[in-house]
Image (cartoon, rainbow, N blue to C red; front, side, top):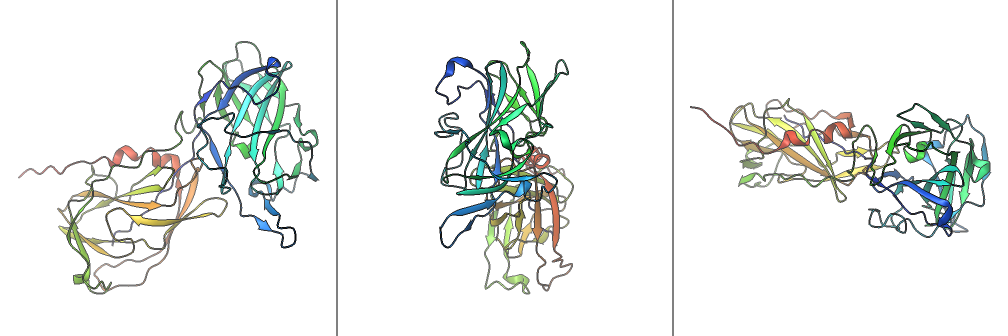
Length: 391
């Protein structure tokens, strides 16, 4: 029994260009770089107070940060009118969608200091257990090896502390981290110590028309295009489907053929509408059964689940026959709910299925951790490859 294996997709760092901050006095501000493509933060589900109707979110990345003091609510956090005012055309999530928050930022030079602006759109009226930065937050000049130590933050009392925020839902906060002024001619930097904005060694270039790169993921990519899959031909449809009656299963041929791969090799595509996971399937016989699906899910590190929506061209949760040649390799592609492009790893859960009447039947469950970027790199392995027969 061949199992359909699901892949997950990744989140990516992306292109950075010089930007104009949303400020009332631009004369003292030099724009260095901004994130035009970015990670997304997966937001925990909010709880609602029955009396006040106010929403509260406990931020998952730092909710167990017990080794730092929680100072409670901080005040006087700068705000901006909207993210779209700084990142026109670059925000892929509606302001009304609070499941994912874009982790966007901007680097400027102001009054002989370097300032990292970390923007945060409030997903609720109260966000608890936030974390911005501490003295571990630094900027490294890659060319000279000079390390610029962070000095302070705005608001100031949250430097090196866990804190809570109370603002109207949808308000865009402008957290600021201050560093010494970067030396003239600085070109390539690495930012450390801002984990909630995925700056744990994130590279950026400060040239004109520069690009920001996450070293693991490359440049300029936020989403993939959906994979181009040759849809299999339906020879005969299901006849009163019964998992224990192989004559009732649908029959297909002419699938999306690929070059030989290790059986079970995966690839993943992240799009705004769906996550596509392709699996390489090997034909050991001229007629072989496949199938899985139904209740498979992907789970990100915050516990959010992404359901399987369909299997391209095949039944979602029924067994089916594939006809071809021994030695064929073909792709089965599963379609899950969309992952945020910042996703690095995801857990794929295949529930155990009921036994069925067939030789070699295998309905074992499976739990596997998937590296999204690694699987995105596998996309080219799934290009259509026509069968070549020598007689």
